Image 1 (cartoon, rainbow, N blue to C red):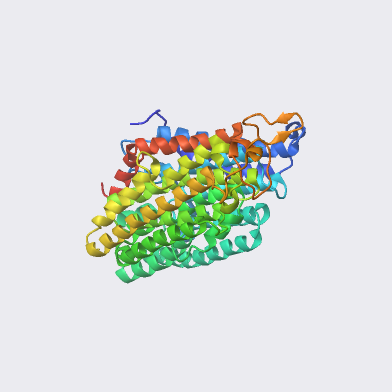
Image 2 (image 1 turned 90 degrees about the vertical axis):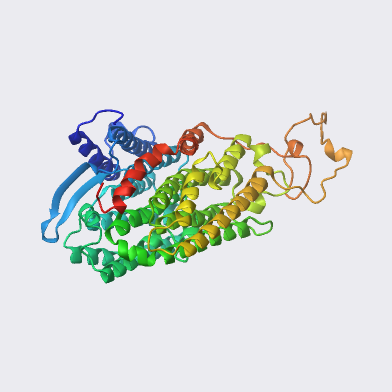
Length: 562
C-alpha cells in the first residue's frame, strides 16, 4: 500500500535529490548571489536560501515517504546502483527500507526547523553565508549516511558531518567552544579510524562492500574470528558517535558550547548515526561477533543509563550551579543507553524498541534543546540556580506557555505513557527480559532491572527540573510587611498585579515583583509545534512507526530472507 502512486524512476530521483540537494545548495550559497536575489539585506537572503533548500528536501522526503510501499517495508526501495570505483568494487548504491525511512524524514524535518529558527534567531558568529553552508553540508552527510548501501560510502558520509559540526561549535558556540570543538573532533576522528579498519576487513574478507549482499549472506562468508575483530573495530567507532559510556565525555562539552541549532542537530540526528550503524551493519553482517560482544554492550548501556541519570541529578540539585543544556546532554547519554540495550538483545522486540527510541529521542531532545536555547536567550544564562532562584524566575509565572511546553517535553523525556518516549524504553526492557538464543538470560534480566531503575532516576531529575525552572523556589524568609506588599509609586499604591523589577536576592510575591518575559514567539511556535505534535502522535499511534520497522528488522535478523 502506498499513499500516492509514484513510479520507481521518480522514487529513485527523489532519494538522489534528497541526498544531493543540500550539497548543491551549500555550493550555491557560497557563490555570489545574482543582483536581483540579494534584496535589501543580503544576510537575510542567505538565510532565506537555507530555509528554501531544507524546505525542498523536507517536501521531497515527505513525498518519498508517501510513495513508499508500506506493504513491503523490508524491501529496499528507490534504489540506485551505479559503479563508481570498479577497481575496489565501490558502487553508488542508494536505497531505503522501513529502518532508514523514518530517520531520513526526521533528519529532513529537524534541519528545516533549525533553518527556519535561524532565519529569525541567528546565533552570534561569523557570516550567515558560512553558517548556512555548514548546516546544508551537515544535512547532506547525515541523509547520505541513512541512504547509502555501500560500506565505503557509509564511511565517507559518516565522516562528512564532522567538519561542519566542528565549525558550528567552534565559530558559533558559547563559552569554551574551542576546547569543546577540539574534543568533539578528536574523539570522533579517532573512533572513525578504527571503524575504517573494521569496514575494510569485512570488505576484503567477504569480497564485497555491498551492504545488501553482506546482510543477505548474514556472516556466512566470514569466520567467527574475523567477525569478532570487525565488531570490535567498527563498534568502537560507532560507540563514540552514539555515545556509549565511557566514550561519552565529548558530548556534554559539545552540547554546552554549541549554538541552539547545533545542539538540536547533534542530539536529534548525529547521535542516531552510531546506533543506525549497529543495526544496519553489525547485526546482519557479523551476527556471531555481535553475539560475542552483546553482553558487554548491554552492560555498558545500563551503566550509561544510570550514570547519565546520576549526573543529571547532581546537576539539578540546589547549589550545584548546573547548566540546563549540560543536564539535557547527560540525559542523552542515558536515553541512548536504552537504544544500545535494545540492540544488544538481538531480538526483534529489543531492536524495534531501539529504533523507536531513536526517533523519540530525536523529537523530544530536539524540542528540549530548542526550549533551553530560548530560555537562555531570555535570561542570559542556563544556570539552574539562577533560573530557579528566589527572585521569581519561575516560567509558569513569567512565560506560562514556554513553561508549559518545557514541562511537556520533560514528561515526554521521562517516558510518560501516551507520549513517544514511553514505547522505546518499554520495548527495550521487554527485549532484555527474553534476549536472543545464546545470550545469558539471567544477565540480561539483571540489565533489565538496572535499566528499569534508570527510568525512575530519569523521572526524578526531570521532575526536579520542572519544579525548579517552571515553579521556582521560595526565599527562606518570604514574609513581608504590609508596606512591602504594596509598593508605592508617586501617584500612590501600585495597582494590584503590576509588574516591577526587583533586585536579585530579594523576596516577595512573584505576581507583584517580577516582570513577565516574552512568551513563545510565532517563529518559535512554528519551529517547535511539529516536534510536540509528532511526540503525541508517536505516543498514541506507535504502530505507525513499528509497522515500518518490524518487517525490516525481522528480515535483517533472518539474513535477508523473508
